[in-house]
Length: 303
Image (cartoon, rainbow, N blue to C red; front, side, top):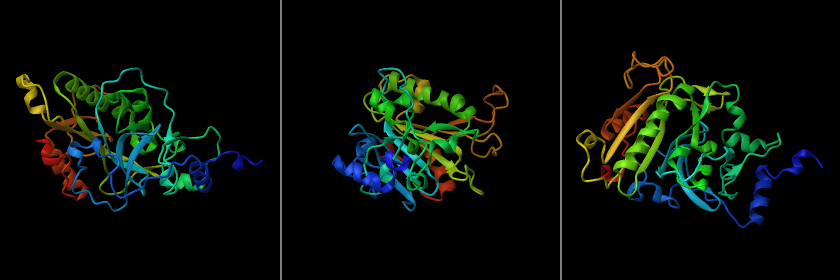
C-alpha cells in the first residue's frame, strides 16, 4: 500500500473519514456557535469580512475560543477568549490544523498533524504548516496563549496553527510574554467574574512580509481585555486599567516609532520589541488607521 493510502489526511479522504464519525464541518460566515467567547456575545464590529474565515475552535467536542482567520495570509487576524487560571502545567505542544478549512463538510475538530511526511496538497494550500516555521527565524506566537487557559484541554486547544502567527523570539519570549503575565495577574487580583480578551495583529502597511513565501508576518501584535465587573476597592494606580485596557507590541525592531516608541534604556534582548500600554479607545484608533476600518472590539465599550 502506498504511503498516500496509509494516511487519512487528504482533502477527499478527510470527508470519508470524518463522515464515518458523524461529525460534520461548521464553516460559516459568523461565530454563532461560539459567541460566549465575546463580551455580551458580540464579536468585534467594523472588520470587513472579505477574505476572513470565522473559526469556532473546537477540540475534543468542545469549543475553547474563537479566531478570525485570513485565508490568503494563512494567519489569524485575531483570537478571542475568556481568560482562566491554569490548573496544571503547560501541555506537550502537539500542533494541529483545521480540516474544515480544506473542505466545508470535513470535521470541525482541530486535528494533530500526522507523524508521516505526507500531507495532502489541499491541506497545505489551505493553511499554515509546521514546516513553514522551520529555519524561518520566527517562533510560533500564540494569540490565545496556553497560560491564559484553565484546563488541560483548554490549553491543548491553543496549539493550532490557526491561533498562531510568526513572532520574533525577542517579542514572544520577552516583552509580549511580560504583558501576558501582567494581564493574568490583574485578572487574578482585581477582576470579578469573566475577563474577555481579544489578541490580534497588524500586518505591514506597504510590502507584506511572509515566511516561506506563504505565512504573513505581523509588524505589530495587539491585545485588549474587558473585565465588566471588577473589585470596588481598586487601588488608585489600578483604576485606569479597568474595565478595559489595551496594548500594542513591536514585532520588528526596525519599524518606525509612530505607534510604539523604542525604550533605549531597555535590556538589549528586549530593545526594539517594546510594548506600549494604552486605552481601548487609543487601540481602536490605531486599528482604524492601519486596517482602514472603524473597529469596535467590545460591545458598548465593555460598559
